[in-house]
Amino acid sequence: MIIDRSGFIRDMALNNSDMVQDGFESWLDRRWADTVMADSRPKIEELLRDAANDAGPRWREINHRTDDGAAVAVRYIAMNAGEDGRIIAIGRDHRAISQLEQRLIQAQQAMEQDYRKLREAESRYRLLFQLASEAVIVVDATTRRIVEANPAADRLVGSAESSLVGREFSSTFEEQSRDAAISLLAVAQGGPNLTAQSTLRQGGRAFEVAASLFRQDRASLFLVRLSSPELGVIRTPESTQHLLSVLERIPDAFVVTDENLRILAQNAAFLDLSRIASNEQARGMSLDTILGRPEIDRNVLLSSLRQHGSLKNFATVLRTRLGEQEDVEVSAVHVATGEQPCFGFSIRAAARGAVARPRIAGELPRSVEQLSQLVGRVSLKELVRETTELVERLCIEAALELTGNNRASAAEVLGVSRQSLYSKLHRYGLGDLAAGE
Image: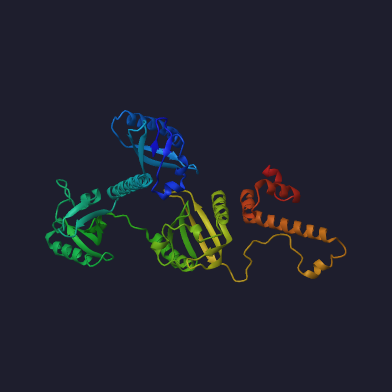
């Protein structure tokens, strides 16, 4: 740009099509300071002053506002042209660099967030590793030396003088068990999904040892778990094992979720019904993505379970991973006690030909003939109005029965406002209006 001593742009040339589209050509014969944002005007005055005084050119970033209100960053350098106080200003479109800087900042923030999450996860697992009652040892697959051991392992097979860390795994046990310890690790090295088990002895006591291979930071490690029946290791009671076996084999689908409906456990029948391939795919999945109509059934289910603690034979639909849809009946219970409150759902396919919705007191005319008998006795307008009111009343009764007389959920199911539902309840004399008020 050629700028006169008054700060007006007298000539300019553009070699960037983006600048042309942003209306930079309209700056001709305008004050340069009028083309920039308010925070950049002092920079313009400083550029013009330094150029007029031959103070030496330097680059300054100026923000312009385009016709559509967007901000455009341009880096300028200004110098004295030597004719009638005119100044030459050369600008470079800085938007590409600004976008790269913004992307760099966003990438850095994302990395910091991921790093923070990793540190939090590592802290949680480190705490779990230290507080676990089961003895756990991590062994380097190359050197066969122990790289980590939790306090339970130190108490079980370690000594009071020194920790297990740094010792060779086989030397931890008695001499007659060292060959078995070496063989245990050799068998476990056969694959990451293979768990090798053996009985090893130390200090006159027998230990049940299980080892499996895993990789971390491009290194192979063994996860070794030890238990001693003599120390009364906590085991699952036999009655609980029977119950778990029954739940796994019952024909009805059974699933346990947290309070956000994230799946924690499920049986084989649930995998078959939902067409989910494996337990790993089901864990952590949100149950409302496959069970019930979106939003409506979820709210009804959760509100009923939290209010009453249980729900029986709730009619809804189940959408499989293959896109199929099937009518089902759900019985559920809310377990609010314990360390982690949860929901339990029993799901079964609805009987063919069974009515999915609960029955209601009134009934519509059974045939067209019954309606035709009213023709001539009442006007069409009155006939349509009465039929509409009957259908509306029946739908409200069905919604109230479906939601256990929860009016907020009933209004959501019907797709009307709560005030509109209250008005209709007064109109038809439905519900316990006095209790509601």
